[in-house]
Length: 297
Image (cartoon, rainbow, N blue to C red):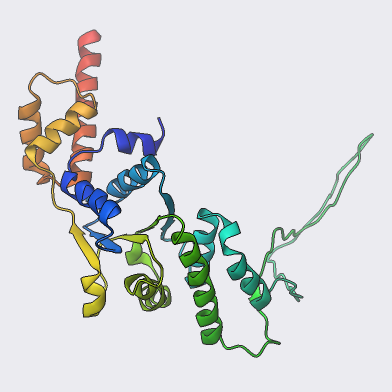
C-alpha cells in the first residue's frame, strides 16, 4: 500500500469539510478555499481526500506543493499547472515563454578544487576500451535566462506571461471545470505570494477564469482585501474527537479489548491533535507487539 493509499484508507473526521467541498464543486459558490491548521493537523490528508474526490468525479486537477527544497516562483507555478492540465491547452503561453527565455547560454566556467586530483594513476588496462577520464565532471547543467535583446523589463515580462497563461486557462475552464490545489503555502516566497494573490487569485476572484476552484492549504492565512475575503471559503482544522480516534483505531486495525478506553486514553494525552494521535497509536501498537512476543517466548 502506498503512503497515499494508506492516508485515504485511514482518513477520519473532516466530514463537514468534505461535505462543504463537494457542495462547492456542485454550486461554485466560492472560487477559492483556504484550509488552515497547525503542523500535523491533517491538512495534507484532507487535501489527498479532496484530490481523490475530484478523480472520482473526473474533474481536471493540478497540484503544487512548497517544501524546504522546492520553492517555485510565478513562472514555475504556471509551468507546473500547464503540465498537469496538459500542455496542449497552453500553446500560446508556451510560445511566449520560448520567446522571452533563451537556453542558448555561453558560460565561462571556473572550477576551484582543493587538494590534489589524480586521474588514472597506476591504472593498468588490458583488452578493454576506456572512455572519458576526468578529474572533474559537470553534468546536466541546464541554465535558462531571460533574453536581454528584447528590451522587456522583468515586471512587464511577468505581466504579459501571466495574461497569456490566464487567457489559455480561461479557454480550458470554459470547456471543463478545473480544481487547483496548493499545499504548504506558508513556505511560498514573498514574491510568489504577491503574484499569487495579486495576479492569479485576483483573476479567479473576478471571474476572468471561469469554472475553477483553487484550494490553498497552509498554517497561516495571508492578509487579504475585503473583495478577496468574500470570495474565500475558510476552513480551519481542529482536533479529533473521541469517536474520531476510535474510528481511527478501527481503520488502523488495532487489536484491543476496549477500544473506547484506549481512545479515551489517547485523547487525554494528545488533546486530539491528529499527528500526535497517529504517533500514540504507533506507540500503542509497538507495546502490543512487545507483549505478544513475550507471551509467545
